[in-house]
Image 1 (cartoon, rainbow, N blue to C red):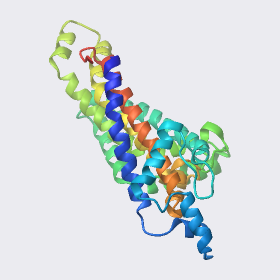
Image 2 (tube, rainbow, N blue to C red; image 1 turned 135 degrees about the horizontal axis):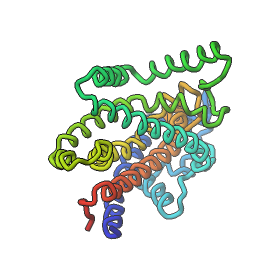
Image 3 (cartoon, rainbow, N blue to C red; image 1 turned 90 degrees about the vertical axis):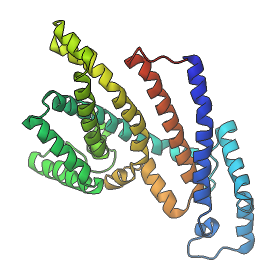
Image 4 (tube, one colour; image 1 turned 180 degrees about the horizontal axis):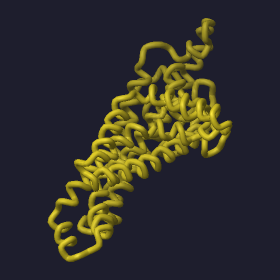
Length: 314
């Protein structure tokens, strides 16, 4: 197991370099002058602008700029500073906490609701309940997140408060603590819940048709034991893969949700940084998201051996 972990970490190195280099080239090769953007509508003094370009290595070749950046990240944990001399790590720190809270809330909802509905549909395959669940998931996939967010914000946030007098689902900000993440968490996880429900239904339905399931049933084992211990455990392998990969997707795809619910997280910061051409912040955020993807996929691979003892790592 130890050698397997080391091997996967070594394999992650080119992934980290490739992804960060790609985003670095894309962001810094865009036309325009970020230094001029610092001065807004005013035209900067040429001498001052040149000093700033030298300070931030903007006159150096692009690959050399990338080396300055990636060496700082790897050897000093330094993500650099933005063009206002504010450390990028400080800008990201509080933002990532908000997005992490949102992503974990969405992931829990996704796991509980998606696996629960998928299990229910698989055990009632071909019946009215199964059809209703499939139709609901298809609707959830078809409706854009932007529409889902505004509709739920209006109904569960505004209307429910008018009817009951209680602010059960806050519609903006993080002032209500953990309740602030319930509605945006569901909106963020909506499409993933639909896909996970369908994946669970398909995976469990195929597992329940396997020979070892029929053997366990023929031996007289309790149906709940057959489904829970033998069926669901083996059906969980593709579900764990989906959930592990989706954690990075949830954190990286929170731009729309955070904008709708006015959550000042990393998605909102990424949108603002792209708009304002704050290249160091954009690259820093993407670098951290790549690291999250790598760690999440490593954890998923290690969980395989727990779920299925037949899997062995050399």
